[in-house]
Length: 232
Image 1 (cartoon, helix red, strand yellow):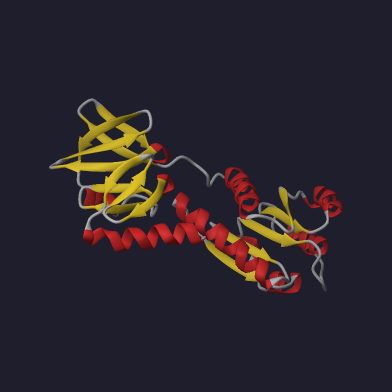
Image 2: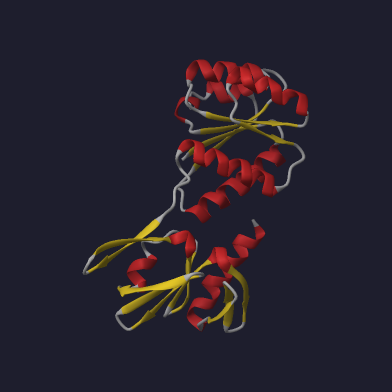
């Protein structure tokens, strides 16, 4: 997914980029994020035409957000446009350029996440991800967002969800290279979904209210991945 951020406040650009990058990582969406400090820089860069999503500060100096948005619409009508503003009155101007949504400054990370997820649905990016399980009767799709963790037992793997489990033949090592990055090895027999991990301590972690083992070899990687999620 190609995302542009155009805002003359560098600190806000950094914050916004971190939140968006982390959400893409958790959702398994590959993204390329470009930053611009002005409307002139954005338009002269020649890169707006291939952006799927643009966060645009409407109160920038120089070529302001509305002028930038109008020119953008002449170049590329398909870009999903999200206004960033400190003044609610500016939001209504978004209808003229078909702005999808807006974010009011100052804003919390949760607000950015909510609007970003709405934009992902609009662009068709936010789709359920599945792992295909081959069975004698056919192929079954396993929704990854519902999987707390995978556990291996010899040649079999069991996927644990809140509402049940599914067992199939496979290899955790092979799955690890296929699954989204939010699935992390906590033990040679466990792959946990970081979205459900609430605590990592000593030789165990809490995943979906269950206590799962953490091996010495996997502990450092799990701690780094867990800390990265918490920090962002």
